[in-house]
Image (cartoon, rainbow, N blue to C red):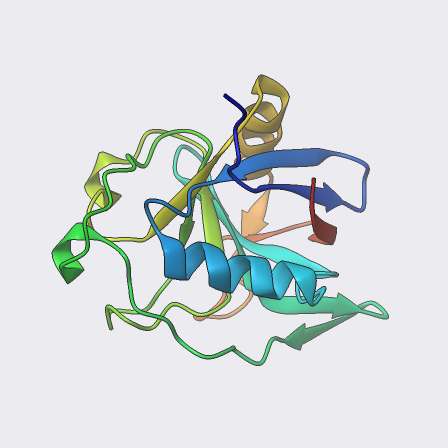
Length: 173
């Protein structure tokens, strides 16, 4: 039996990659939304803007264009596919799991995502996990990125990595 789950590769400008498998059977709206953005090249030049050791790395809020930081215009929000929002999704937030970022509003996820750099059981059932890394090298990259130097650029940009970590592209593989 062949695995039919979609896979994507996050390619960073420095040559490192993060390979992920997505689970449309667990979070169909989330996977469809993410792949729509991937196919539209939405994530090209987006940066990881929030990196926290032993927790996660987050992207999708800012572009780095011509050495200028530009805020992403959020896409349409989708329903949060997680247990506390009435949706069965048993993906555990462990190292390498990709999940949608959101505000305190349960159905506010749109284009920001995070990847866990540690096991984060307190997120289980509260955020829409929708995939996982597929190899140890990808996990190593996620963990390395979570441990970079960060500072508070402004109150809304806490844990901002320096130097910035731009995503070259996210593509289906």
